Length: 443
Image (cartoon, rainbow, N blue to C red; front, side):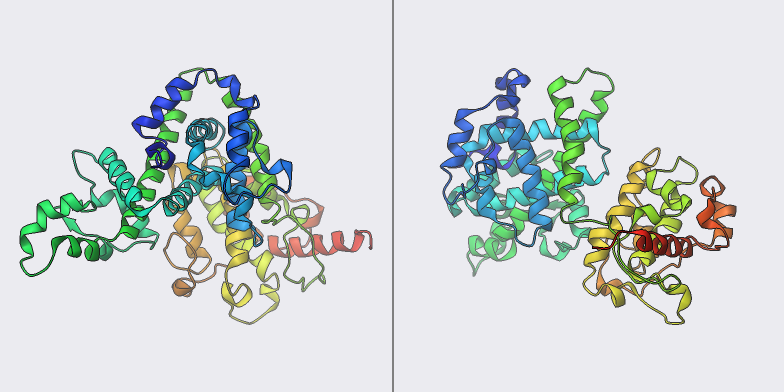
């Protein structure tokens, strides 16, 4: 049977593994046991030696690479990362999980893209690992983990408000009794066993609860515990000295993650177009007007909200999707230019969220509701994510004029020669981009 810590590295078993691990400097040393287990994983692709992690630090990077590729690479090959679901590496995996939590906590903000990436990938990894465990063993492990996660012998439905809000689960999918979610069969039989005289209580449990719901809830609860763990480490890091090995991993992640994401998620590129009616295309940051460059680099407290929500959101979305807005009389929606919302989710929002994270303090850290306002300004209503079904509930907000920027965000308005005769940063971008395209060497 698979170890509990392979599914929940924050379990008592997982914490015991960490206590027994020893010197953290070892994470950079080759580990023959790790190499052997990865190489001999069933269905593992070994066409390239670089596919196999040889140290704990490499395993940490491979876990992050797996998360990025699985999310972004259309040609993603699970066989290149099959060892990640091999239960025999559970001790190495637990150590790696805790190393990543600590490195992310000291290097990134709690609401950053990097933290979200890691936490979300942990949830996906749990579901993939559970799927490979035989049904009977899987049920035992799930029940054991749920018993450990329970607070005062119960799981309150409020602890799942995030997963319900994400629409991955409906409240109507849950069996709730007196505020507690009933997930395990023994709880169900204890509370409702006497209610069924003409049907098998066990059969009714399978109908009303179901294993897929249990697994989804389990993964979400562990994701939540992971977020809480990272937050505790971040708080403690202000009072205690961090091990140099953890600092080094954090610094490597800071370079590694953007580099890997940029392979699939580039909003930094040039494109053709005519001045005055520049065509939609990849954003070119070299053409950004001064106010936008300053916003992307990060805004101090006081002007953060308007800079990110009003200025950057409208500028980035129109510059990328429909730069001709002021030369057109058409009424357009984001989906008219981006039907499946791929560009919006993979290029526009990451740019905005990165800029929000660069603010001092990071915008979402103390004002997470501004994410909803950003979605609203794109025309998708007051929701936490863009969804074609919500489009039209609000309007796609057009870019602020230079006059409004001078009034509401004077600290960002530092005109250069590219701003001369311009009344909107989008027009400035179009003119500057046209000049850069014209000066670019021909192939």
